[in-house]
Amino acid sequence: MVKIAPSILSANFANLLDDIKAVEKAGVDLLHIDVMDGHFVPNITIGPLVLESIKGKTNLPFDVHLMINNPDMYISRFAEAGADIITVHVETCPHLHRTIQNIKSHGIKAAVSLNPATPLCLIEEVLHELDMVLIMSVNPGFGGQKFIENSLKKIENLKEMIDNQKLDIDIEVDGGIKIDNVDKVVKAGANVIVAGSAIFNSDNIFEAVKMFRKKIDK
Ligand code: DX5
Ligand code: ZN
Image 1 (cartoon, helix red, strand yellow):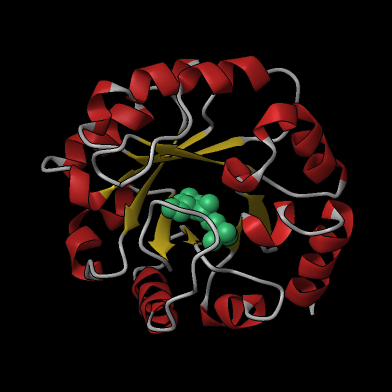
Image 2 (cartoon, rainbow, N blue to C red):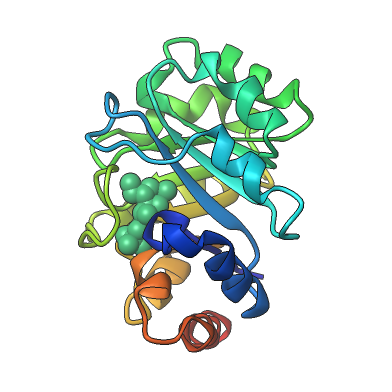
């Protein structure tokens, strides 16, 4: 079963809860929350205060994507604020094994993300420790960018790595996913689909999610 994780980066921040309720009603599986620090990526977005303010107001699990330097400093803050999954970027973690244990010590799921230019071999030694791997299909920082086609091969290779080791790890893909390319992403092996602009910038959030579901379940 492929999961849909709308990224609230493209939601209407003046009415954030309305947009969250709309995707929840449309039947999505996770809420993808993009945390950016203006250092690791050239944008500043959401902090733990925002998670705290929506916690308890939706039943959707919080899928927290940390695009920040020194994530270890903030893992406990985000866990306490309601994160169900925390994803860190391999590019920000010199002690990746320790960081993964740090996330898991809060009783939540641990995931690692790779930028488009980062090779899969960097997570080989910790793969069995992970609940999910997030493949970036755009350079992180902004919503609404174009899908990088080379990501498809990377998803296929990751799927092969996971299957060869008989592991049970989700493959999430993030960036530039639209209704007209989601089938390729799923076919390559992804089972968690992030979509920001394609859902929140659409004329009708409910219909957009329904179209995604139709494409995915096909
Ligand atoms: C990019 C973020 C994504 C982004 C996706 O740095 O990690 O989650 O919001 O947005 P779309 O789907 O518009 O590419
Ligand atoms: Zn993201």
